[in-house]
Image (cartoon, rainbow, N blue to C red; front, side, top):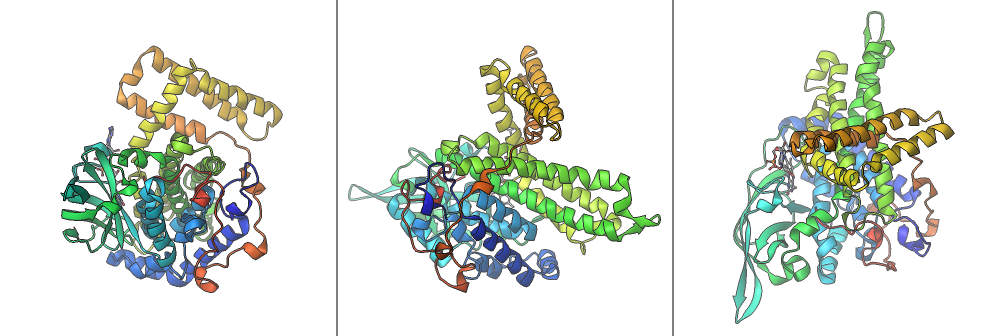
Length: 523
Ligand SMILES: Cc1cc2nc3c(=O)[nH]c(=O)nc-3n(C[C@H](O)[C@H](O)[C@H](O)COP(=O)(O)OP(=O)(O)OC[C@H]3O[C@@H](n4cnc5c(N)ncnc54)[C@H](O)[C@@H]3O)c2cc1C
C-alpha cells in the first residue's frame, strides 16, 4: 500500500497491483456466489434492495469500504485509480449495488474533506471497522443541479449563552441508501451559509419515506428524508465551522465523478460482453451475426471504441490525481469529461446491446434490458450530462480566450508531431479533430455565439469527444511499486483479519491514501 513507500518522491497513491487484483478477484467471486443472474433479475423485478448484500459488501465478508478509508482509520487508503477499477467491476455486477457503496463513500466525503481530526476518527473508523452505511443528503425537491437553492435550514440552539447545537428542518430528495443508512451527512443552510451536519439514523424528528419506484437501479434503496426540528449537537457540525458546505462539495468532483464514469464504463461493457457472446451464437441468413459487418460495425465496434476511449481518459485523470495533480479541484474539468463521455458511452452501448439481441433484448428475461435501465442513472446523478457539458465548455472556453486560441492549436501540433514519430497510433485523425475544434471555438468567439447556452453546451460535447479521442501514453500504473508480501493484507478481510492492516502513519496527511489526491471533500 502506498504509504509504506511515500518516502519515494513522486510515488503515486494507492494499492499495489497485487492487492488491487485480489480485491477485484474477490469481488468477482462474491458476485458469482451471491448474485447469480437469476437472483439479480428476481430482485430487479420485485424491486427489492438486498440490504444483506450491501452490508456484506461493506463489511466483514468483502470489505469494499476499506478501499476508501485511509490507513490511519483502519482502511487501506486506495488511490483514485484503484477506486476506478473497483467501481467498474462493481458496475459490471450491478449499478444499484455499486450505488449503495458509492453512497457511503459520498456520505463520508464531507468528513474526509472538512471534518475535525476527532470527527474523522469517530466516523471513518466506524465505517472501516463496523461497516456502517452512510447516505449523502444534498439534493432537495427544489434544489438539484442548483444546490445553492437549498431550503433546509439549521438554526442555532443556544443554552446559557452557549451554542450547543442546531435544529434542522427541511426535506431531502432522491437519497441513495436513504432508507437503510446508519448515518447521514445533511447539507443545510446555517446562518453563515450551507453547512454539513452528521446525523444518526434514529435522531428524533428524522423520518424516511418509502423507497422510490425507479426506472432502474432497483437493487438500490433511494428515499426522501424528512427533518422536522431534528436536534444535532455542535460536535456534529462538520469541521466545526459554518458555511463551508458548497466549497467542500465542489472540491472533489474531479475524483467522485470518475467513480460514476467507471459505473458507465462497467455497465456499458457488461451489456456489450453479452451482445458479443450472443452474436457468436445467433445464426441468421446462414451465419453467426458476428460475421455480419452491418451488425458488428454498428452495434458492437463503435461502442467498444467509445468505451475504451473513455477508459483511457479515466485512467489518465485518475493517475494524475494519484500523482497529486488534483488538489483543490484542479482536475474537475477532466473529471467532468470522463464522467460525461463514459456515462453517455455506457448508455449508448447498452442501447445497442438491446438492438443486438433483437426481440429477445426487449424482454425482461435478458439482462441487457436491465442494464439499459440501470446505466441510465449515471448520466443524471453526480451532475447531469448537461451540467457536465456546461462545466467542460466554460473551463475550456476560458482557456481558449486566455491563450488567444492556442490551447487546442498547441495540442493539435503535439498530435501532428506524435503522428510523425508514430504513424500507427491514429494521432493524425486526433490532430485533425483538434485543429477543427480550435477553429470552431474561434468561429464562436468571432461570432459571439457562446452567449447562446445551446452553443456553449454543444461545445462541451465536442470538447469531450476531442479530448477523449486523443492517443495517450500508457498510464503510470505499470510503474507502481510492489508492496512486500509480508506487508500485504489478506483479502477479503474475513479470510485473515478484521482490519485491513496495522496502521502506519502517513508522513504527509492523516488521510494516508488520499495524500496525493484532491483531499476528499464531499461531493
Ligand atoms: C436514483 C437517484 C439517486 C440519487 N442519489 C442521490 C444521493 O445519494 N444524494 C443526493 O444528494 N442526490 C442524489 N440524487 C440526486 C441527483 O444528484 C439529482 O437528481 C441530479 O443532480 C439532478 O437534479 P434534479 O433531479 O433536481 O434535476 P434538475 O436539476 O431539475 O434538472 C432537470 C434537467 O434540467 C437540466 N438542467 C438543470 N439545470 C440546468 C441549467 N442551468 N442549464 C441547462 N440545463 C439544466 C438537467 O441537466 C436535467 O436534464 C439521486 C438521484 C437519483 C435519481
